[in-house]
Image (cartoon, rainbow, N blue to C red):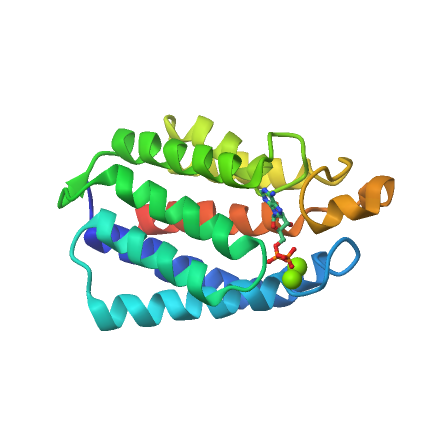
Amino acid sequence: MLDADFFRRWMTATAAAVDREAERLTALDSPIGDADHGSNLQRGFTAVVAALAKESPETPGAILVLSGRQLISTVGGASGPLYGTLLRRTGKALGDADEVTEEQLTDALRTGVDAVMTLGGAAPGDKTMIDALVPAVDALGDSFAAARAAAEQGALATTPLQARKGRASYLGERSIGHQDPGATSSALLIAALDEAAAA
Ligand code: ADP
Ligand code: MG
Ligand code: MG
């Protein structure tokens, strides 16, 4: 079973990964964006960690809902509302249980990813965070490690794609040949899930 501590570890490990990789995320956002993805997420996940410490939500659902709300209110870019929606909707789907199964988490994350697709209008293959998140959820039934590998593979596979959503889509064919920053940060989010499970 996955308890509140697991979900706190997930958010803390994501914040640490975003801190560690902020420069790389911003560098990826430079040729096909506005060079702020790393700093956007750093600001957002710093606020997440602070809010979790201050408000001490007690259930998996409440932890993710609070985290999502922080991202929506602190991240200026497109990724804030999108990641915020992912965590908020995943948290809502978990309800108020003290512990959840891996299967319940998988189903809840699928609900969250679907909400991101509805909000942003992106489908798999559009060169966005969706290209890491959808394969991760599909693999999560097997294991956290499989989901992590699938997300990393999905992020790498965005390089030859032409962007059809977000700022990178303004570049048309010139977006080809660059890895998508949001898919890359989504791989960090899913890797942090595997880290939380291993701890
Ligand atoms: P901004 O583009 O506003 O500066 P960020 O740089 O923080 O925001 O985030 C950019 C990332 O957001 C992209 O790399 C992409 O993965 C993701 N993204 C942008 N628009 C969408 C969308 N409509 N649906 C899903 N993901 C999107
Ligand atoms: Mg940007
Ligand atoms: Mg921006």
